[in-house]
Length: 133
View 1 (cartoon, rainbow, N blue to C red):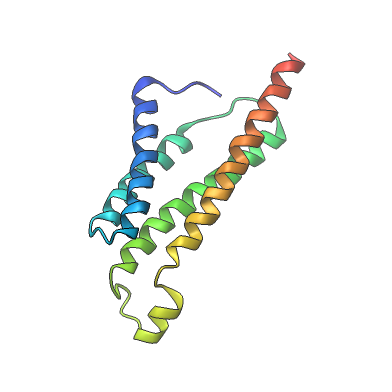
View 2 (tube, rainbow, N blue to C red):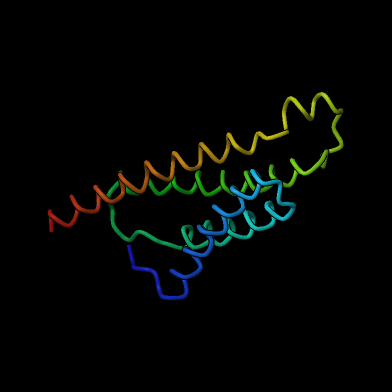
């Protein structure tokens, strides 16, 4: 995979920091936390989806697809954060409490676990590929 340019790296790091700040902002009931998280998630996911793999290793390609699912989960987390601000979907109150309120934590956890797994595995697979050459 090609290395990121300076501006791509800056967007990637800023997006990651904004996602952490947005997620932490929910603990302190900061009203802007979904906006900060959403902006960070869009930047983070966009840069990761722009990265291309030119090789033919099936395992790396599969791991990149898993990472793309994780990016989509980050974006779904942002949507659920906005829905958590109030009954944005117009649902009955008990249905909202059961199925929407604070469920963004679950999607964030799934996305983070998938990111950790793919980062570790892609690194190992790229090392194996480099040793073969």
